[in-house]
Image (tube, rainbow, N blue to C red; front, side, top):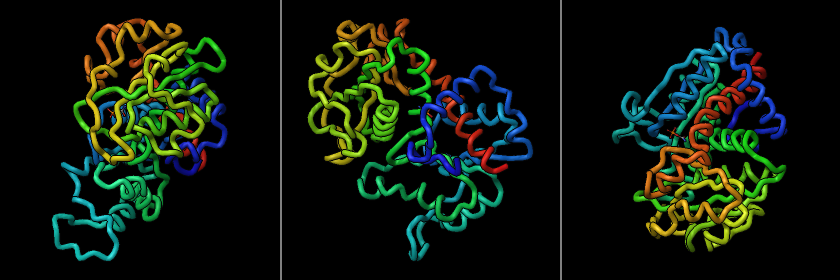
Length: 316
Ligand code: CP
């Protein structure tokens, strides 16, 4: 693997998941792979899980890490070409990415969409700029359009807990006080379909995801109907893609409740975290034995570790 920007960088998905499950059993077996190598984690947005699981994954591989919080520690970056840099942006991405890539063997980036301009966010300007100007392999730690490390961790978690070969997986929109990106939902949808699971997406009118994310998934506007026979219920809020970045609804009727979970096939509850309790999901659901939110977060270590292993093997 040369870089990890989306599911398109995965050659054989089942082999990647198998590798992750093996690594989880023996996390230190590739301890020599990262010897004398280093990774820079660049954050343009906050993080708990991605930051710490990435450092833990690197530690398990003997790989050194440095973290740059661009907002509080770095110069503000200019991405536009040919501009007169007389505003608050002190450094151009052309130099920043080239310099960072000359210091480190791997560069991982988190850069959410700003939810102001769809074309801009979906052009993946930050990731694409690093791809262009940084000589080191790039890892996407959540970008404008996707969160592939989260989707891989989710897939590992479902593989560990599924009872039937092709489970029914429901991705349900849930309310939230703030406008959130579509990245997690986009990647989850793409990865579940690539894994050949039976995916239904349910959301209020106006929250349709981009066509390339929906793919062949079933879209059901009646949440209760979508939950019928579900083996896994994955809750996530996202803002509107069509009315880009807008919060069209805060309808608490879309919260995942214990009564709704009773409609399912004893489904396991999933969420990428952080989650707003009693807004997105009732306490009784997330605190129940059906909840997989902690195993999902734990698997973030092994999704990053597996990706890093594949990238480091290519660097050898
Ligand atoms: N799920 C996830 O990416 O968590 P953080 O935003 O805390 O990294």
